[in-house]
Amino acid sequence: MRTFKCLLVAAVAIPAVAGPAFAQSGKSATSPATTPAAASKSLAGELVAVDHAAKTVTVKHIVDKKPVQITFSVEESAVAALAQFKPGDQIMVTYVEMGDKRVAKSIVKA
Image 1 (cartoon, rainbow, N blue to C red):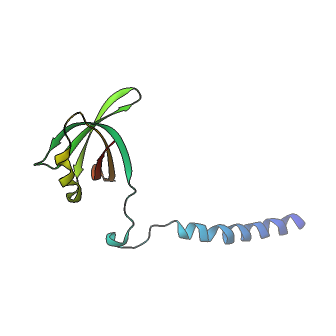
Image 2: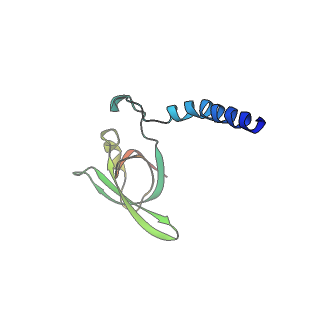
């Protein structure tokens, strides 16, 4: 009988404690305008190319001892800074990932 009481208390206590945690883990019904912004990331490397018409920059950096090139779309606020860079410059790009696209928020010399 004592074992039955312990099991009954445990069966009631576990959902009572864990239930609110599961209730909080669901996706909220907020609109996209109120969702938090994506986290900014930074990447340092060598500027390979600048395409002013397409508003993109290509940066080469090292991953696992191998050079890798990444192309970033450049946000309107950072387009003016592109004029001061030329291929071969060491730069630092601060960017966010939006889906499969990387958008540069700022570009500075490293």
